[in-house]
Image 1 (cartoon, one colour):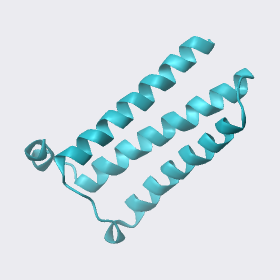
Image 2: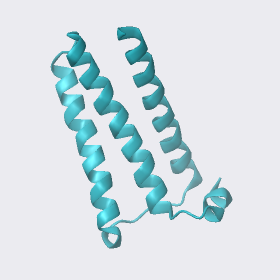
Image 3: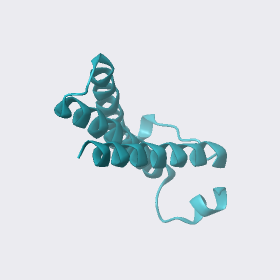
Length: 99
């Protein structure tokens, strides 16, 4: 996986920030949909704050790349990819269930 990342024309920082932003956006959308459907609880408000902080943190890292260190470990990157896929999949399932 590390050789795949090294061959991509994308900086590892942008890859990590993009996956974190996708995960945060999925959490934000999922919790917002729950609240709008009327099945939300206090936990959903906390998840909205968490998702928003992930998106804002991703934007800050992209804006200030000098202060960010990114691991090129393939295990950590694979874990972040799995987290992003699970978060987006769970959000889509929740939206389809509430629709």
